[in-house]
Image (tube, rainbow, N blue to C red; front, top):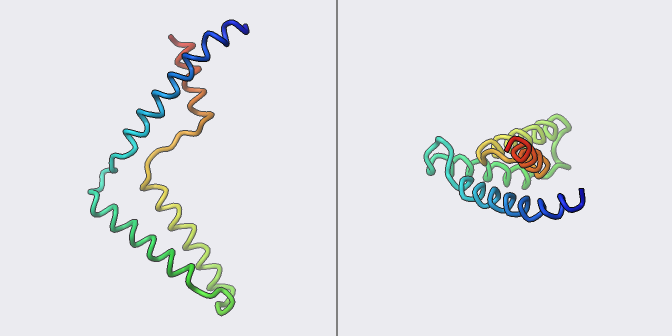
Length: 103
């Protein structure tokens, strides 16, 4: 078992390195929206986040603070949607192991 692990480690490292390089190259492409529309939308989100951070929470009422927190969460969720698909490290390992078992 140890020799199998020692023999498979370079293969796994090379495979992982290639997938990360391929993923980095593919993640730079924009989504279906044109680049100008996506960038202006992101700029609007960032501008609104700055406005919300500039507000003084001590001068706000409790419902206003709650609404501001909710809006921040919605903006962050919307900005994550523009960034594309992300795979966790664990998911990559599972995919690699499944490919090894299949092949």
